[in-house]
Length: 288
Image 1 (cartoon, rainbow, N blue to C red):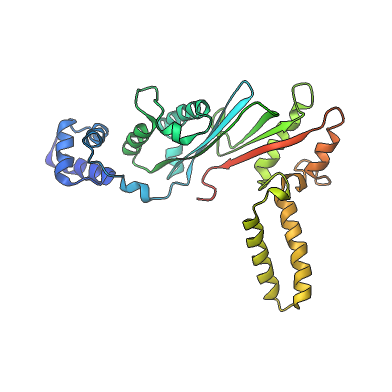
Image 2 (image 1 turned 180 degrees about the vertical axis):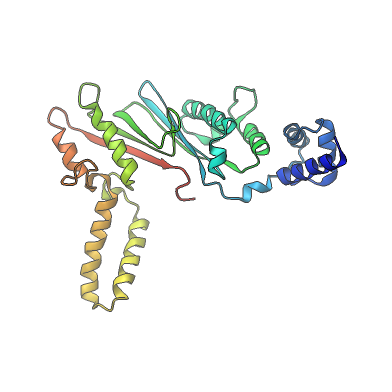
């Protein structure tokens, strides 16, 4: 390897680890010039610092879910670019993490320390993948739905493979099973994917979100110069609309603009009462 190549690798290793020139040179010598092994060497020596790349924003990536015996898990893993989200190494890493996420029931603390197929724990494999790919990668969030108190249904939007996409919604519904309009559960999950409700009903919307929205509404109305009493009436109407548009049961049903989700639930509850118990919607990078 030429002096130019050696210096180039030292520079790359320093960017990955934040470690000084001398220690990077030693690590590369020990690893025969292999960057990934050099990162491992520095970590084992306890001198590899957090990668400088971790200060960047990772808002691309994938959402994955796993279903088994009616139980479902969901996880979001982020990268900096969509290019990396299509990388085979990244996708395979995400697939194995999805399997582990199901085993640890969505507990990311347990996931971090769980061993992967290569014998290394998730946290260590994540660092090695960052070093190999050269981008910030983060395991952002995960959740698990058991099979008690209802049945779980899901919908994948912009799927790149089975159980992998950019938006995935899961909904737990009581009163739906294989013998009772199971298709409705999938349609509700699809509706959640499209309209992104904040809660099942308005009581579930956080008070802080309502107060913030009310503050914005009142400021907008006040700036128009309307009298205080009229401003109060208008703000009440607007906040009611906000609550309806963001609570699942009050939203307009995506497949029929003349009905609300609550109407669809009622229509299909003739044999057995249907009740939405819980839901989640993960969109890659949302809120980052």
